[in-house]
Image (tube, rainbow, N blue to C red; front, side, top):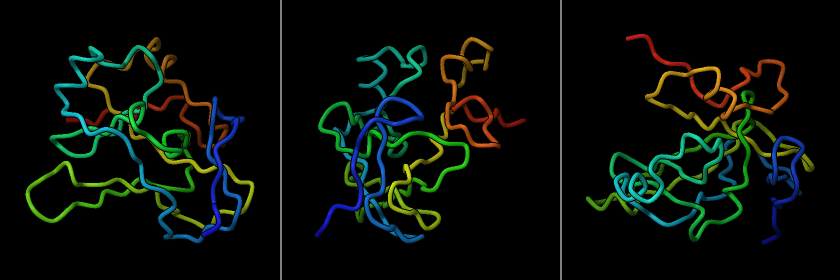
Length: 157
């Protein structure tokens, strides 16, 4: 099967993933792969990652996180956008073992060759969204509706 995507330098940020063939709305483009770690293991190993503005961590479920810095694939290079052309979809495995759940990146509209794949990271932090944190997690997607940050708005309780 011919490759439909390729990772290369991105105008948004660092590396990115680009379509090299047409991708249809609803198609699963790539699985987000990496080592399964518990939330506690990640917190102990990294002491939280909120100061970096960069992460290969993807919350899989209430028990596990996928760490694409370890055993990851090209999906880790897909950038955030406030006007994405993809979304992350969780595929829950049969049975009780939540480590077997999987994350797929799926097209939410048709994507033309040459277009960069993006999705909304949905980053939520319990900390107050100070101007400094918003700057650390700055969005560079360039979309007209860009919020300027990858941080999701706090929900009013």
